[in-house]
Image (cartoon, rainbow, N blue to C red):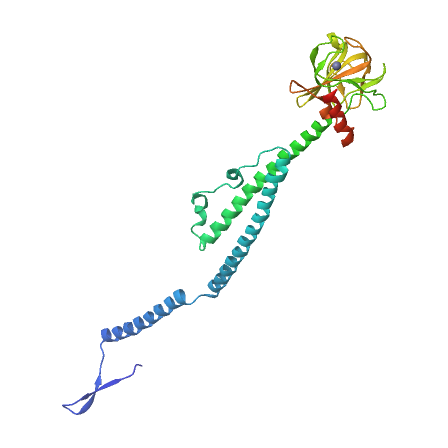
Length: 317
Ligand SMILES: [Zn+2]
């Protein structure tokens, strides 16, 4: 049962019962309903757009934390880049310089990752600027590390070559100190002991008794071992790296062409075959096809004093 409404009639001065039609009743219900829906919609908008749900609050908190974490990571990348810069600097200025390797150009060490296309997939996310900048820093560092790693590989190769070079250079005297009985002729323009004219002496003559051992002065391959005109019995060793050594006037030859020899290995004995006035070894060193004073390379079995004395003698006798 609904409430009954009354209306006061001024003319009859009586209360009369008010009767609503069905339409009026429906209209009243709809009015109430629309007010309710309106309030509901306003509350819904407030809840969705102004008030965060617990899930949203959680995400916002996480987002803030992630952003802070990005800041920390970015700072750490900067620190690692500084360490890498230092390694690169030492590599160019010290390690590569030591092995006669050119420094690596900055354009290769510090490649640019130009254009934003590369990071387009990151541009839609919030805080994309921070994310892109950090990603880019990492990419640049990864490339630089790859270049640095290649440089170290190259250095290892150069070190091995240098080690081999040190073993191959004709760096000792061809006679042992106890066998050597002085030097009869040094390197350069000399009066020839037999022909008596001024000639270029392309090696040094070291005197010793007949049969004294002659040693290979560095690792290498025997290029020739046999009779060689004025040199008589003669051995030539190719040491690689542009170095060759020659041992002339030998009595006996103890190696065959093609044989691999080690520094200090006995390859022949002292004699006076070919054009020679006494027992000695005529010892030559060629560097890239040019004759050089062999005494320059005697740095391995001589003290610094002996070395400079030897060098002086070979240039003044
Ligand atoms: Zn000579």
